[in-house]
Length: 289
Length: 164
Image (cartoon, rainbow over all chains, first blue to last red; front, side, top):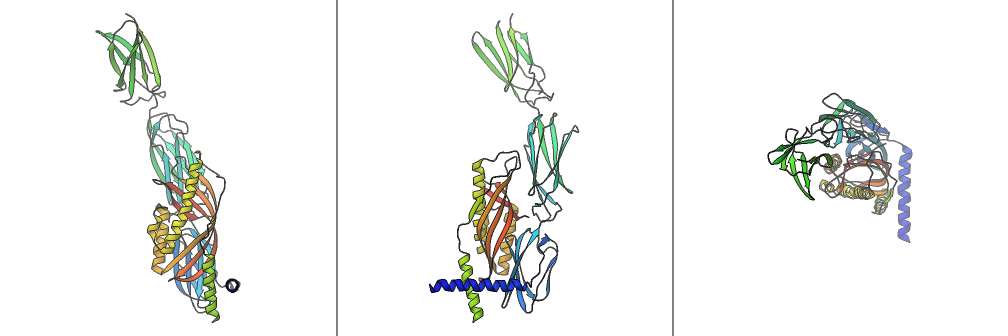
């Protein structure tokens, strides 16, 4: 019982002490300070004290003369955050809090762009996300316009302007119809960041082959293999030739070379030849001699 | 005599009130910007790892050991808190943070899935010690913006700062 009363009295004493100091209102400090800029704190009274500025982001400690203005030059506090200012004198403690806010001038962008390579002609196939930072690498949480620009070597440009929310902005872009290395640029203020997005041909489109007799075999040749936008499908892409005859089937996989694929297969009158690449089916030829 | 009693009382009340009670955690419904749906399991893991980062930060700032930050922090957030620890060490200061309440909301899941941003209205107590002598204890309310990025087996805090 006695212990409980002691704690209660202690608590009341501490609260009354703090209230008394709060009422004094001796310490005057700005409510917000821009990161990295100079600021000052005014103290009242007389005698010596120690000033602590405390936050998870930064800590300062200064011996001060009460009644004087404490000047903090530019660069003293540069990490955005919520700080406590605690002035501890011989017989008194005062405290208050203030915020260090990020500068509104972008100095760095963290730009995530995906994918680094994709087929042409994909709607919303490219995404970009940006976090905007100031010179002290504080996230700029205030709304900031960010422009995203995707341009390909042929001069086609897609552009979007997005305003950040909590320091982040994102966009989606279509991959263009021409293969090549596109430049994906995010820009905020005078800062920009560039990523290269490789656009490769899509699946073959309108796959076609022809057949001709070659001795005891049939020569099968594709036409130039292109995607639906006319881009040449890359060499090495596998083209599958099949021959079906009297219920039996034989297949040959051939890599594209210089945009073409060709093969020779056994000749059987009445056989059916077909061509495919991935999930794309080409034409069929029925061989009758 | 009165001064000594006041100091003793302040220390006692401080010690009592800085006790390590479990913080209350409230998770608001996600208010997502971005095209990517956020799986519930991913959201839970990110919040769990973020709350664990408070434990790492508390211990690191109390013991002035930057090495304790590594499991939970990475990049800028880690560098900044490590710098604070360095400053505290040089000045003979340590700080005890005790989070009391979190009000968390996930606000952004980047389209490629490589970052999650959340906000947290945090209530915490901070106790300042100078050469092991308690100088003050203060209650703080602040709104934090946190960006997490995935590591091998967990989400790590990459940006940790108050926002207004």
